[in-house]
Image (cartoon, rainbow, N blue to C red; front, side, top):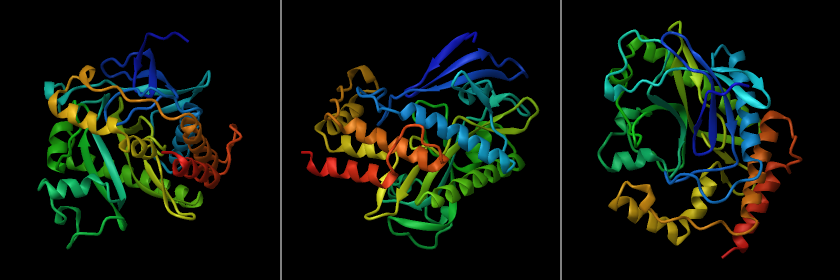
Length: 329
């Protein structure tokens, strides 16, 4: 394996084997780590046991399943335990690097699908701030928090800016240099992926609340679903057993929101964008990382049907986590 360079993310690395150049796609390997990041802070002090391996298994499984539905992806197999992918160029719209008819580039958008509007959904915040309206999402009146939707909402946000922001579809087309026809194709891909995730979640006793995809324009001008989808880091699910419970990275956010560090962090963000000046997070209490790791592993086992981690059933993993948090002060 001849790695030219490695791009380090907050929870996964991309090992570049061949750089994308001109019209030619590149090639790389995705390596998922046990690290995690929340609140835009960066890598947090603890690791979640089994998180990386479970996300790798989920990503490969999901790539293979949507390919069966006619959705093309950047997945190309497994090499030495790592996820093999093709790579496209990263062109920045703010630098006017994307031209009409461009190929071999990452579309600088996140295409979001929402099947529910939980209380913490950004949609409610945007409505309250006057940034959009319920009519823009097809509602005659405001839905209550927690509403499950009959049809998914497709939303769009920026991808290559310091802070992601939501866009109108007209702004999105202009930024990404895509036509209405191409936009319709991207939306269709998003709906196919969302439909697959909804069905798969239901078969595992879960409800798929929301998620996103990213796409690249390949060397022939077609679209490939890129990055990963259908994982606890990328999507939000709800378990419908005894007492509904969030199943996603939101569990980690919810814990830290109960600590003094969260308020200190939010206050620091208002003063500076320099992350070096933000307060350092405390470590989680002993045992909590293992409980959360079991949720990641149990989710992957139930989703893929392969339990290489000897993980407990998801209901048990969630119950153990809930019991831990109930007894923890």
